[in-house]
Image (cartoon, rainbow, N blue to C red; front, top):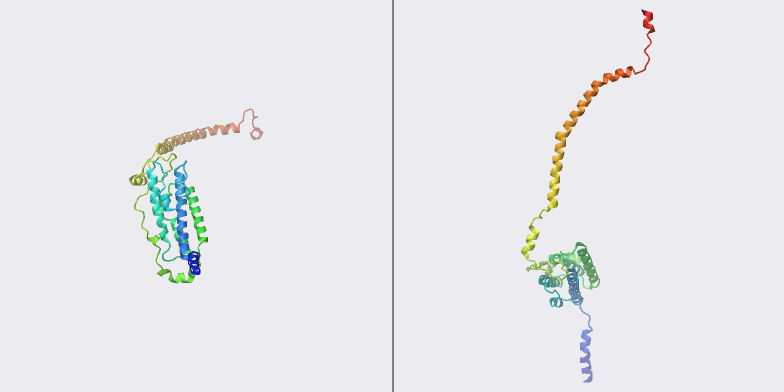
Length: 279
């Protein structure tokens, strides 16, 4: 009897000591990586929107972020974060059904960086900060890929033969978020006014208004054109006529100049001895 109770007491520990299946471990790794990517994205946008507050480092799960209320009176930004928090949680459904190899693991993680909800959420960040965020996310994906257990992955030739028969992951058919998300515009004092979809539509479709600099440039261009026409039509013909008159005067004075050159002042008269001997 004591031996029986001893075996019963040790059996739970023995069960817990069994290694986890690679597929289950990879799925858990995928979900943990998605939480990390979502946290880093929200942290970057939140820290850019608030200059005095920082996104808590403990908000690395969907539930913790859902309960976070550090937006003050900024209801628009709070709604934006809640919408993206729910949309990004569905990224976890992209892996775990169908193919579960390393290539599919990396593909579905990288698809998060191309998702339109992700692009919409970070679109108000400066370009340099968006690039830095995406590069940091890619490093997280590489670290997760290095921890992936590929012991149960099929051979490459088997994947090529069965690729057409593998159903797509659930995440590829995920419908877009129906609730419009508001702009996360940076606000130093966490005080912003709510933006509506109508305002965003008018802002993107309306033509850019011309300012005074555009009209001044147009006026200077018109003045330059008129000045050029005046020079070509009036000044150049008058200048050509004057030059022609001056040329005619010079032609009339040229014979006198030639005679002056042949008989310079103070020169001795030419010898005419030959003419006198002939006479």
